[in-house]
Structure formats: structure tokens, C-alpha cells
Length: 69
Image (cartoon, rainbow, N blue to C red; front, side):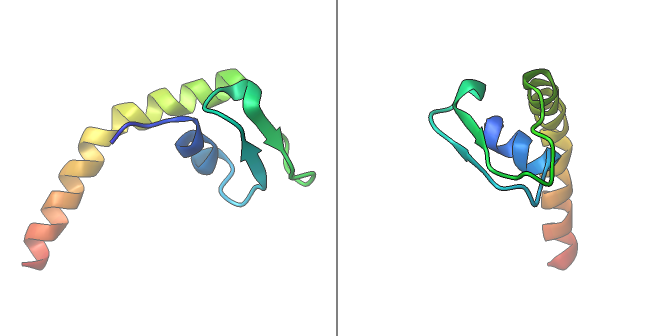
């Protein structure tokens, strides 16, 4: 799975309202007045964090599947 800006924003601000035009931070239109818009550096840091955590997430998913079986 490739982690992108949408994954990062959903992780940082799960209940926020926003629209993304394209796949760049400059296309982020923040609609939620009750929450602050994350900065580009916060989004980039979250993309890195999620990317680094992905192998363990996949491993846990496979483990849980085997435990269920």
C-alpha cells in the first residue's frame, strides 16, 4: 500500500472536512473551521510515520488472519 496525503490527513484529523484537488498539499482546501489545518510539514511527517509503520500493520493483519483460522 502506498501512503499518500489523503491517508496522512485522515490519520491526523479523522473527523475533519476537507477537499483535495490533485495529490499535492497546495491542492488541500480545508473546510473544517473547528479544527486547524495541518501544516505541510506535519502532513509529510505523518506520511513518513505511516509508511514506516506499514510493514508491522501488514504483519499484524496476517497474524490476526491466521489466529482467526
